[in-house]
Image 1 (tube, rainbow, N blue to C red):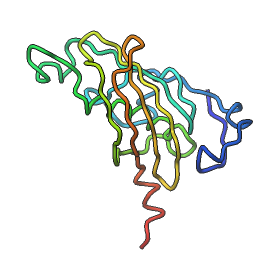
Image 2 (image 1 turned 30 degrees about the horizontal axis):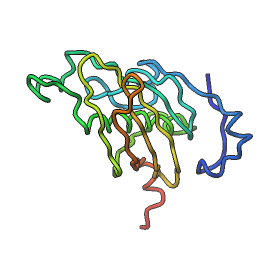
Image 3 (image 1 turned 135 degrees about the vertical axis):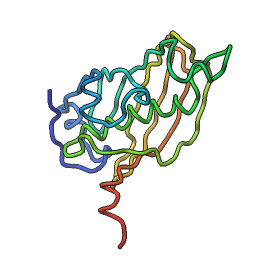
Image 4 (image 1 turned 90 degrees about the vertical axis):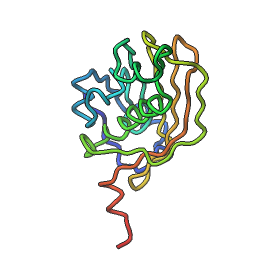
Length: 174
């Protein structure tokens, strides 16, 4: 399945007719590896059920009891570290940009995170369901928002900025 190419730089420039024409992608582990560079044990999403390039993404992470971070965070009271929850949202958000034409396999970084809220512990056996939106994409910088939930209950949310260094360098003043 391929996404339609829409020659615009920001979501706000997409007309509603163009949004309805865009195809969504569903990515299993092999698909995730095709579009982005994180690997086990740092790949913090298991699948992306729906990625609408340049718009939104929905995916999940099933937290098995032997995840690498549970024994140390915290012994006797294991939970997913808050910053790894943010990283899972960032990895899913990156797919909204990496599935756009010419971005496949490029590197994306987290540049900043704001308005972080953690309202529920995420423990072994939980499934962290993630939803992200790309609010704007300009010159290699993307503003995003994301929410993580467990059994329909919000566990975390954040606003953050992601950056694609390859593209950002094109616009850097020399």
